[in-house]
Amino acid sequence: MLHIRCTKCGNKAIYYRVYSGEKLCNACFCSSVMEKVKRTIAKFNLLKYGDRIGVAVSGGKDSLSLLKILNEICKPHASKLYAITIDEGIFGYREEAIGICKKFIKEINVPHYVFSFRKLYGFGLDDVIKLRKSKISACSICGILRRRALDIAAKELDVNVIATAHNLDDIIQTFMINILNGDTDRIRWLDPEIKPRSAFIIRRVKPLMEIYEKEIAMYAFLNNIPFQTVTCPYMNEGIRSEIRFIINALEDKHPGVKYNILNTAIKISQGLFMEERVLMVCKLCNFPSSSELCSVCKILETIKGNIIYKNH
Ligand code: SF4
Ligand code: ZN
Image 1 (cartoon, rainbow, N blue to C red):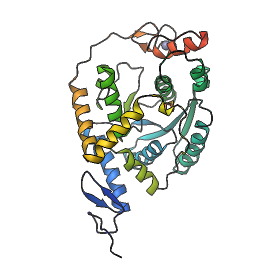
Image 2: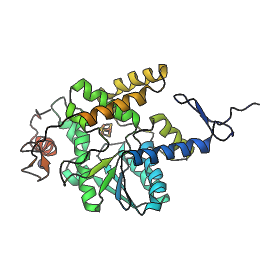
Image 3: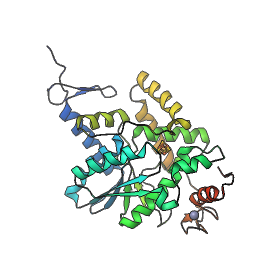
Image 4: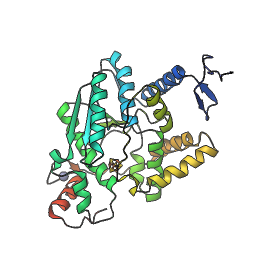
C-alpha cells in the first residue's frame, strides 16, 4: 500500500497541516510544535535565562502539553519550573483533573502545588454560582478568582513569571469576544509583550499562543499525555462556544484565517493606547485595584452577604 510521505523526512505522514500544505510524520509533527513554541518565546521575549516559571496546569491537554514542552525547552537554560493547579471547587470535574495532573507531573519530575478556592477564599466555585444573582457568567467569576489564586501561588512559590496554556484558538476567541463587548482595555491586554501594571501582579506569558488547539490535541495524543475527559459543567454559559463554532467554520473554508486573526489581534493590541489609570489598593485585600474594592473582593463580599452583585 502506498503511504503519503512526510514533506520533511519522507517517512509515513500522519498529519496534514492544511494551512501550510505540509504533510508530517509523527516525529516531524512533534518537533515542529516544539520549534514553533521556541520561536514564539524568542519572538515575544516571553522567557529568559534563569526564570522561575510557574506553569498553570489544569489537567487538560493544553496545560499538560505546555508543561512537557517547557520542561524540555527550559531545562538546559537553568530555569526552574513549578506546576500550579488551581482547584476551583467544581464538583465531579476538578477531582478527575487533579488526579491526572498529579500522576503525569510526578512522572516528568516537576514540583507540583495545588491551591484551592476553598482554602484561599472560603468558597468553592459551585457555592459562588449557587448564590449568584446577576448575569455574570460562571467563567468570568472563575477567571477573576483564578487569576488572583495564581498571583497568590506565584508569590508563595517565589516565581517571577506564570505560563498559561492559552492556545491560538483561545486567544482569537477572546479577541472576538472583546470586540463584541467593545472592551478595548482587554484587547490591549492581548499584547504578548505587555508588562504588568503593578509589582503585585506576576507577568503572564502564553507560549502556545501560535499553536492551533487541534495541533495541541494531536501533540498530546502522540506523546501519550493523559487528559481529562469530563467537561466543566459551566462551559457553555458564555458566548465563547458560539464564536468558536463560527471561527472553526471560517478556518475550514479559508485555511490560515486563524493566523490572520491572531496577527491582527496582536497588531491592534500593540497599537492601542491604554489610559494610565492610577491603581489604588483594595481596602479589603490590599491588592492593586481600579476602584475601592477589587473585583475579587466584590465577588466575595457579594457571596458572604448574599447580596446582588451589580457591578458587571
Ligand atoms: Fe472555570 Fe469556565 Fe473553565 Fe469551568 S469552563 S473551569 S467555569 S473558566
Ligand atoms: Zn480586594
